[in-house]
Image (tube, rainbow, N blue to C red; front, side, top):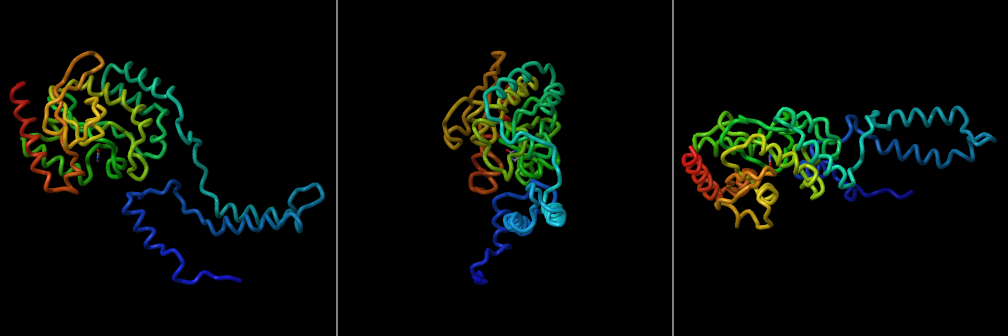
Amino acid sequence: MTSIARHEQPDLRELLAFYAESGAYDALVEEPIDRFAEAAVSAQSAKAPARARSFDGQASAPAEQARTSMLDRAAPPARPATPAAVPDEAQAALAREIASRAGTLEELRAHMAAFDGCNLKFTAKNLVFSDGNPTADVMLVGEAPGRDEDLEGLPFVGRSGQLLDRMLAAIGLDRNSAYIANVIPWRPPGNRTPTPHETEICRPFIERQIELANPKVLVTLGGPSAKLLLDTTDGILRLRGNWRAHQMKSGTVVPAMPTLHPAYLLRNPAHKKLAWRDFLEIKAKLGELG
Ligand code: URA
């Protein structure tokens, strides 16, 4: 019998550290799955027919019992059936339709909570709709919720949210005087980048949310938000600091300032001075617009 030398065995601590670093904090099922027991079940059932099957091909009672009890231990608890993926354009069309039907932000939130067309919903714990004051003059839009936001159901409550609060405070704003949302309202598993398809499905929701909040100034946080809402393919370092326009479906145009994402600033603190300049621009514009 061959055995794996100890130094060749995967180090579970390293694997867990790798998962944690990649942001994969959440298990997809509540209970751990014992893959060794599953392997034993497969091995057993592969051997079983010769010894334990009756003439009509059914497993004999003891073999079936052994198999069932092992499966009981190995199987994850039953979960509600959910679509594994959302494959087609029909869901984007449905999102556009239900977003346009929302007459208020509360209706929009309710429509989004009832919408099953984005597969991100099925791995997220909460819909992350918004925080802050929906009647504020300024609306900020980030990319997608992370783990903390998913748990609380509120945008920007983790480390990057704390930095965002300090950036707002630097120009005299807080969550009573700013409205905050994300392009994607459900946390992508493991904080992966949302796919273009997921982004297209969620686009009508954030566009309608901006239209209903109707801010005087829009601030996009990070590249993905700027690209989507300012209809550009330019990189954020080129875009930031220059006023652009966000065109609503109604035709209304709102001045928009693309700036760096707080999570990026946490990784690149030397660039905080650039974001500071952008926030001074935002302050001046709000002053100008009264
Ligand atoms: N990053 C985002 O883009 N949005 C959040 O809500 C949190 C982190």
